Length: 274
Length: 277
Image (cartoon, rainbow over all chains, first blue to last red; front, side):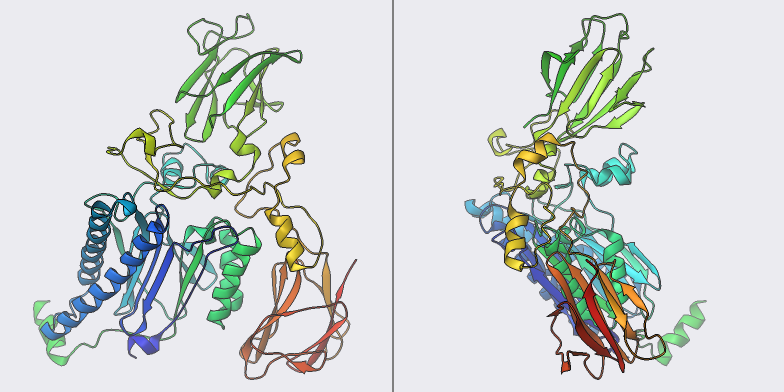
């Protein structure tokens, strides 16, 4: 099955109940199995600019890279390619934002969090910077795949504060990494095997700060037959709970197998290598 | 705004301390930041570690211990209006941001980074010293009115409810102990409602709508979801070739409000929605 048929993707973004601007940006490219969500930060409209640059650079650059790879026939070597692609292109997005911020005073200091998923060959490479998240619903288990780059997460990891207490913290809004703030950025990239029936959720903190993980999970579980409704429901829940931040979601449901085609020659060669 | 501790004994305020250092100590000896000259107080009795907007209290193996709100603690994450007891002395923890349970959530995200090239003027919020690097603030904080707790209005009109949500409950909130600020604030919930099945093998059964979402129907055939929202209950089609009907009229893909005694028909089963109170 090609990737476009194998994956069902929906996205939705909303400025919330309090903010006048929406500084989140989302984009997806179903034919390439790419999903990108960014939550921008910066004065006036700089946050929107930063997140907008991030998603457009990532989607166009990854598209180009994938096309040139196909021409070279180098696309079947597996995991490292996805990791490499994401790492390089997050770096490119970082450079674009950083340079814009350096050259235009009104954009000084702008930046963005980002979470990117690239689905290929029955797996997904996930890159993230900051506190935008990816979750996975698999069967009855709903879990976070990314770990926030935030002060609070560091405090939890360091045992300074329990997960329960973390909900009471007033330091939720401090991220320790962001795209575009410095000349270089270290994206965290991991690769996961994908199973048919999995649902992946990418979201900005406007969702998980307003809605408990448990409620997010049960909503996906109950509404998985209707992905657009599930996305809508998540945003509505965040807004019903106060909607204090912009809220964005991308949902990816795996409906079929999308193993990369492997020619008889490649099969044969791999035999000999063993 | 930095948090404060108000020292009192027998209801008489003795002193006010601003938590403006990463670590402040309480004890009998004069070198403590909060020195209490009383024999029931150990030389170094307790410490308060403040990281930006959060403060943590720790008992430094004192002889007589530390109580917070009447409970003995070793380590405690301080919340607005907590009362720390050391011997006969009381220290009340005041953090304006905590009083407005969710103020900090309104602040836009900031990045923490080690070397700061920007002048200090750009760092209005995070002046907490030694918090592992200064916070570079990307935006001026522009605090909208803060809803610390949502009034349970029980009103059904969306417009009114939104107004309630946006209104800070200033007077009552400051008097009450800090409500925990979970991810999900106590949004006004509508009164309890239920669905009673009117036909089919389960006729007569009643289903109370105690959760935010309740799905009805047969997966793969026809499913609808009933959502409980602050301003009422709604029905939405989830899956199936045909749509459920509401009072005899077929629904579309949109959400529809439910009124008392509405009749829903779904996968050949009739049911009635009604409020329990």
